[in-house]
Length: 106
Image 1 (cartoon, rainbow, N blue to C red):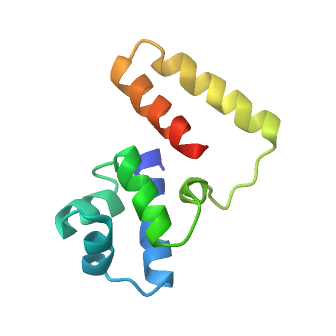
Image 2 (image 1 turned 90 degrees about the horizontal axis):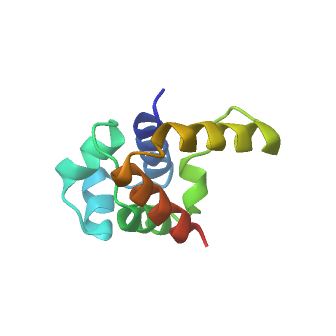
């Protein structure tokens, strides 16, 4: 599953577990329902700002939207990050998005 679909599915799962409708979560975050639907289905990725708002609205930490049932060691995760960076190092747009996500983690 790609990252957009993973994050979207996690948002949807948390939203449902917290008893939010798409309409309510979209309203709280400040986006329209169609945008939230596209995020949840993995067609669009939320901005770093909206990702933070979604996590805050669902009373979770941002990282929880990226964690799946698969448990990996820190070493394995770092290797994945290094591989991912190598793949996108020449893609200016993706690097800026990644940098924004990392800045918002702190």
